[in-house]
Image (tube, one colour):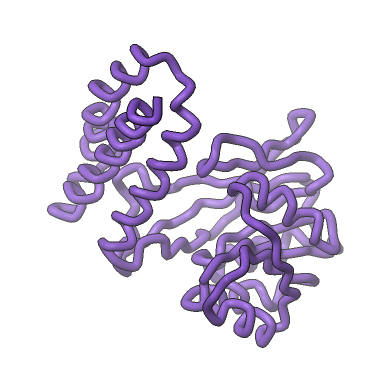
Length: 248
C-alpha cells in the first residue's frame, strides 16, 4: 500500500480548512498545511484537526506549491486548496489507488460551486485537474495564478471516479474580488507582450469568451445566473488585457 501525503496551501482560510482536512482524514498518512502567515484562526483549526502546520512566504501559486511538495513526508501526494473537499466517491477512489493503483498520476473532476450552487455549465465542469501524483515524476508549472502539475516522461494518467468539490465563490462579492485579483496577476505577466497583440486580444477575446461559455459550454441552461457568470468571466478577460496595456 502506498503512503499518502495531503498537501494544502492556505491564507486566512478559517472558514474552509476544517472541512477540507476532514474530507481526507481517513485516507491520509500525512497532512501538511503550508500557510502564508494567516491572521485568522487557520493555524488553530488545522492543528486541532491533527495536521502539521508550516509557514512560508508566498511568492506565487506555482512557487508556493512546489515548495509545499518539499514539506510532505511521502512522495505520493494529493494536492488540495483549502476551499476544496473530496466527495465520498472520490475519497473511496483515492483509497483504492493507495491499495492497488499502478499509475504515477491521477486526474479528478472538479465541481465548482457559486453561492452554494454546483455549476456544471459555463465551462466550469468537469474542470479536470491533475491532483494525485508521485512528486518525483513532475512539478508545478504554468503562469500564475493558473498553475498546473506536469508529469515528466509522458507518464500514463487515469481519471478517478467522484468529484473534487470546490467552494470557490460563496458570494457574488467573492466572485468579483477573485476577478480583480486574478486579472491583476495575469496582467503582470502579459505586460511584456507586444502592444498590438494586447489591443487585439482586448477587442476580440472577451466576446469570444462569452460565446464559448454561454452558448457552447451551456451557460444558458443556468438562466440569469448563467448570464451573470459568463458575462463577468468575459469581463475578467477584458480586465487583464486593459491592465496589461496600462502597465506598459
